[in-house]
Amino acid sequence: MPVINYLTTCIFDHGALAQLPKVLKGLGVERAFIVTDAGIKAAGLLTQVEDALGAPPAGVFAETVPNPTEAQTKQATEAYKASGADGIIALGGGSSMDHAKAIGLMATHDEPLETYGALVGGAKKIGKIPPLVAIPTTAGTGSEVSVGAVVILENGRKETIVSPNLIPATAICDPDLTLGLPAGLTAATGMDAVTHCIESVLSPQVNPPAEGIGYDGATRAVGNDWLRRAVKDGSDKDARWHMMMASYEGALAFVKGLGGVHALSHAAGRLHDKRLHHGTLNAIFLPHLLRENEGAAPEKYERLRFAIGIGPGADLADAIHKLNEDIGIPTTLSAIGLEASDGPGVVDYALKDLAHFGNAKKLEQGDYERIYEAAL
View 1: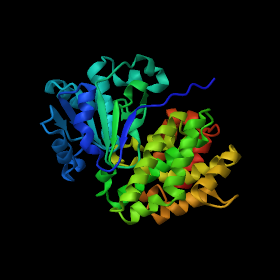
View 2: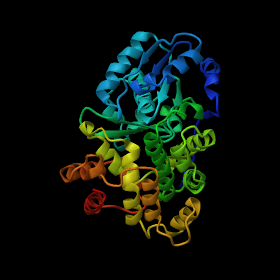
View 3: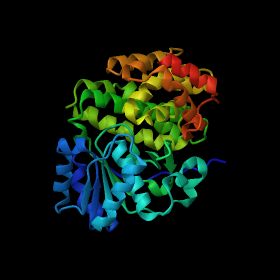
View 4: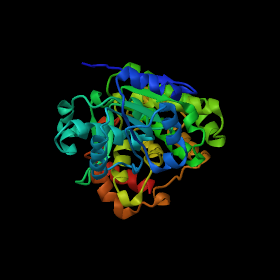
């Protein structure tokens, strides 16, 4: 029997950052600890947030790595505790937001992170974390309104940790913070949002509200061409608004589940020495999974064709492949540094990933091997 929940408060518009002091006061936060990364700091966005606060934060951790790690989370948690903070501000893309969730979890819970993993039933162990305000600076992951955090554990697994208690207390979505985002990062994060929308629609779980939001996000990003416009002109404020909304919608939708694209992307993303971008991986894998899943949900495929603006019966996978080409996404895994020798490990971890179990149809080891080889 479906159980349907929806999610958290979001302040969404150009200039929304100005609401930060009011939001923190409403949450009872007097000493906020900011979690971000070096790129955000260098771009001046950290300074904008500090200025909006009107007073110095309790502390700042600005070294978050792409694909955050348990080892770094331990380090940042100690800094959080030492600062005397009573709440967290996550500033950045999905890595900073997931890292902030993990810091909040470690600061208030005693067991190793691996015990909170979704596949081992860890959600039931997760209680309240410190008040968390998420401020995205990319339009892709939607982590500002999601129930999950993805962290590379010390055992090598890229673990998905899921709990309603990890949803930020408030999201501040200010599209102005994405105006300086380079075209390549705009494309990669935008395809992350597109993948969230499409995979959540195709997930066999029953959640019509989430599914409807997924269709709208796909229409907004692809059918209405806002992704191409944002990549072409990063100063297009309308395009930035609509892509941040598509990202937000993608995360609202994926409470319904994800699928094989994310299983493979999580598995490849755990290869820390490769430094692969999650959105780029999603973009490359998505056409291949759309071909693999053809026939599993024909009515949904037809509605997705309509949503992204292609004709009845058109090849959905080809349309996504063309979109990748148009916005400058590499079309093969080899182009971003993956090799055939990486395949067995990627396939092995994909089969164990939470998203694997939400695919439109059941996938076996041989299916993933074929998909990886085709994508290579």
